[in-house]
Length: 120
Image 1 (cartoon, one colour):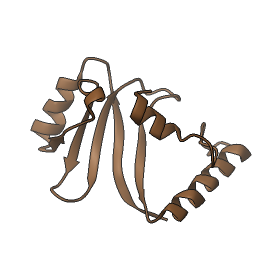
Image 2 (spheres, rainbow, N blue to C red):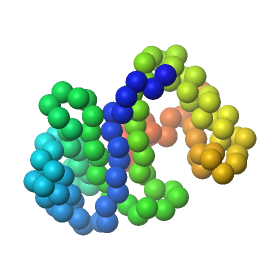
Image 3 (cartoon, one colour):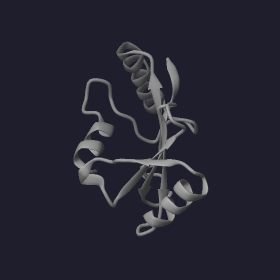
Image 4 (cartoon, rainbow, N blue to C red):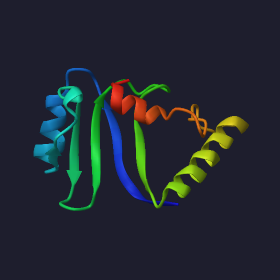
């Protein structure tokens, strides 16, 4: 089902985006790429390599349980995505120490799309 990593979102304290550009861009040599207009000055995206399709995303936030840090995986097909979303939801519903703290219920609004389009 999962075919790769699209991006990993890392969190930095408010006001340190310039430090992220210095470290990820200058020190590590990753190339920044444009972010959506409404997100400029709030997030940064860095490409890993020339054509890998993989990125590091930097956003403001604290590393607490409700934080926006996350990996974003590449999925083979819409059917694979729907099956994986159901497995994640079922695990969330079952609970337990390894269960996701939050999950989108299949067929309901996708929280990731809402955050991306509306800024939270």
